[in-house]
Picture 1 (spheres, rainbow, N blue to C red):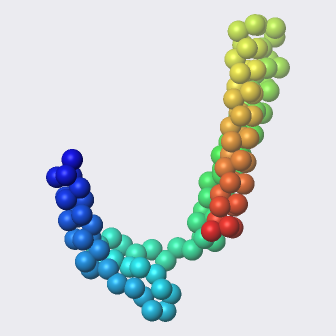
Picture 2 (tube, helix red, strand yellow):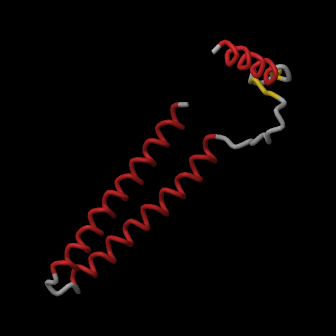
Picture 3 (cartoon, rainbow, N blue to C red):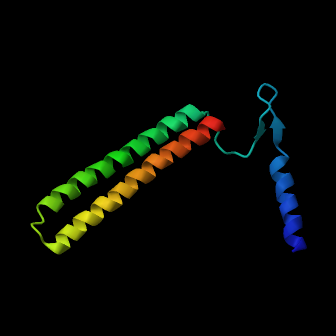
Amino acid sequence: MAVFGALAVQVFWAVTANCGVQTNRTVLQCETGLPQVAAGNSQIQQILKIVFAVLAALSVLMIVIAGFRYTIAQGNPQEVSKARNTIVYSLIGLVVALAAEVIVAFVLGKV
């Protein structure tokens, strides 16, 4: 266990040895060789809004398709059950997509 602790300390010092503090933003930046991205909260929020909008549109499309399948099932219990399950799962997907958008907006708005 002590070997892992010593190794962790060595890795920490190796990683933080090339770190410095920017004076204009007081943000810790390290020279790790990783690319720096200048994406802000608004850009991330716009991208996620597009993703969630596509998911919501697909969910609504699946509800419409399942509605058509329900109407053309002609009383076949298996087809009615499949259409009903599709509607239920699509509604669940729609609720999850909307909740995810609200959560992302809340987190990015508060951070």
